[in-house]
Image 1 (cartoon, rainbow, N blue to C red):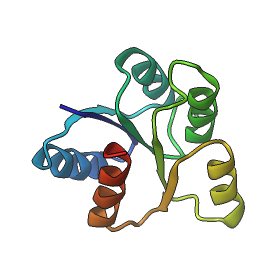
Image 2: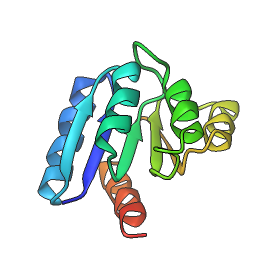
Image 3: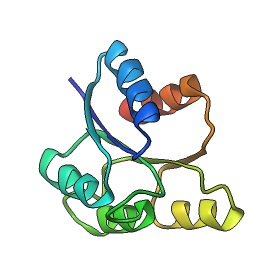
Image 4: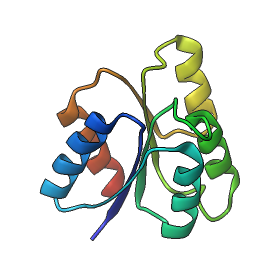
Length: 121
């Protein structure tokens, strides 16, 4: 079973994504803090990470930077899911190595389609 790490401090979004991902047959790991997200990614090696840009602990962009710098985690696909909607935020996220970037509010089925695309690669 493929594992997806959801790193977001918005409990409502986490619950929604957990439900949709579990319905689709994925194992789900959920964290609400950037530092814990980084630690979980390193120890659990998920197949994909959905990462919020703004979280307590470490900022999502810093988590992304560290994930992509590490040999152990740099190949894990990361989809940024964040309220950071400025052009510079999007460009920064993609430049740091995000595989995809979605702005909140988002369409859940669109995110699911993107997750499936990366998981099936």
